[in-house]
Length: 619
Image 1 (cartoon, rainbow, N blue to C red):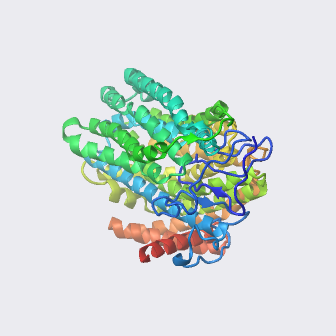
Image 2: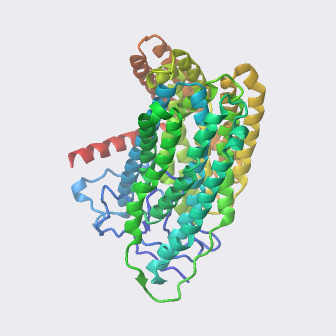
Image 3: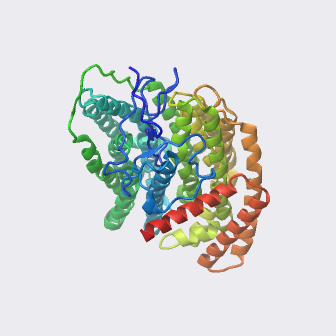
């Protein structure tokens, strides 16, 4: 069945939030080429919120927009100034499609980024509470071994695997509903998949609870108190069920182009953990944090159920028969995504395996250092996840040149942002750790150890960011590819080998250095890999690699200047503020002098976000 073409000249599309898997309605793809969010080449476009519907343009529902023409709407492309807010309406025919797309894109990015930052800040508060209540000793080591379960569950059930499998299925069900298929295809999909998925999740949770002693022995054989880790693991194992249901709700809502509720889940999750520690910490010790994980998982589901219920309770379609049956989920795509996610997450397993043989507190120092050091990476990837639909749309239209240009610009911009953060971490790591964690049971000795590990971790932040950006160029066409998993596997092998060779001499710093080397190798392989085939983006690897040299030099110089400045100030807060300001100034000035590609787009992005925040306050 040939899909009905969307109205010209404005083609509906979905905006994207910080999750690599989202549905994107597009024009019909070329023969043999599936667009992401579609189950097959003949799937009709999923229904969208119309421009004049009550939800369109609502600050609480940044869920509709219009696709850019080639080259329009990117944060680093020249654009005309926005007209006053009073003159702009999504329903107004006077507004061009590219302008509405930029406006909605900025709104969606701002809302989701704000909620993501709120969740990340609550994660820091969570880590601060953990450090203050339990320090960095054997108790926190035991909890962090149990923390492996939610780390893996969030990657596999919320962020990657489940979303890539479910969003295309829901998109096709929505398209069949719009075509007037008998009954309600969306409700039918829920009835067919949710009970089976729930049973599978319950079975896996029960298996983890029963095998917790063996799991702890495999993850951390040198742990001094395995019984405590077993108790915590049995509590955190419940998150397999809650995370799976949360991921299901997120996928369904994103397919309906509802991104606000899914963006709040980590706010709810960290709130549950913090509340659990504060309420139960005095009686249960570090087990209270594991109980908070269980409670936080339930809150993730509860935060999305009302929005999902509103989408599912509508009237069933009474349309005619003859609609195409949905294609089964692409198991090869799910398998390739899951394998890549498992390989990437296994870096944590390698680290904790080696650290479990070191003195008590080693795992905690690694955890605190990693969580803080990765903040620049998380922030730098937000824009890239928002622009992911632009890449997918270009590939669906056969415009690989536009997709390539978009990915290469994203690499340049994300590299500048993460290198600025890396320079700040290198310059001010002791001050950051002291301000965040040094209180209660977390001593000055813990601060020095964590800051040292953080500086080594920071050397791999560019590699982490490049992996996050480049892997989208492999999966953006919605086709299975095993190369990213192979590249990640090579990085894991290097991490394991270097970790085994260096842990005896350098301790936790050796483990962190092995992590940085392994992820850098993976990024190099992804940059040089066959992403330019018919299912990927033809990135010009040598050109991208050459463009990274200048911002790296600027970051090293900025880090040195910031470290000298911060070292001369005794109080940690003034030292951090002054050192970070020096890092930013030196990096921007050198970047402009060296003509770094991503500097100007980054500055325009900051100005645009500031202007929109200011406009929002004056309305």
